[in-house]
Image 1 (spheres, each protein chain N blue to C red):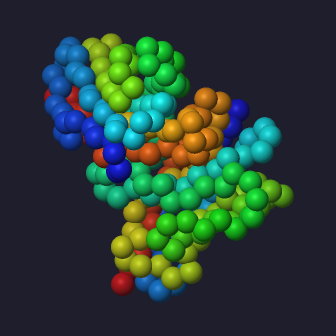
Image 2 (cartoon, each protein chain N blue to C red; image 1 turned 135 degrees about the vertical axis):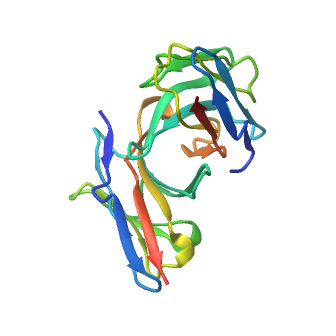
Length: 114
Length: 112
């Protein structure tokens, strides 16, 4: 899991609540990504960011929001508009300067809606 | 659009036997292909990647993958499987902006 931390490890949300998942990296990577994992569906991209103060929607951005105020941090907010948020959420980062193309992943946050 | 397919939901193999996990891809242009492994309730760990060059790519933990352009495949292999190799394996292809498109995953079960 390298230098990427995600917190909390487990998160429980009540219907109608917004929750924020933390992702921090100390790898000095420029790009950061959020994925959602559901059984049998692989990983799907929610949002990504190549640089501070800029981010783009992925394939399933509806009901989610992000910010990128610092290079090392890329928090994800799951809003009440996300109708089925129970899933495993993974954050990743990539070094653009080295052109390695490899994404490195954090340990994940498991979100459960009660 | 870039995509990968993993045709097997699960692969069962006895310890000590060769392990193969299949992946086929569909891309426009030259593919950048990756293999990751995931243990229960953990993040993904990078195993290996193909960018260009030799068709046989060697990676971590004794794994290797063979890139076959004519068959559009990138199968993951290990000559002798261990019980500790039991995990979920993902194939992925790089798209624009460095985004990865993942397959659905293949569960590997290695029995003693």
